[in-house]
Image (cartoon, rainbow, N blue to C red; front, side):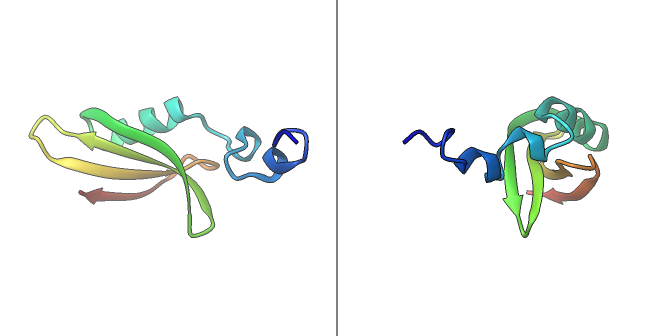
Length: 81
């Protein structure tokens, strides 16, 4: 049976209906906090929170990990990686 027809996708954390912002919007939010080049961006479910994890390399060569809440759009954490 297909995962879409048996209800799996309906309750799956990656279902788009659980997010209020898109990946592109999350990238824009992250780049406002840490200007640079996005080297990786993905949706993640971490400690009960649906978030986007975005890795950005600055012009100085530093790499930061920015976590953006996929529902509120708030920056949850900025960490030098």
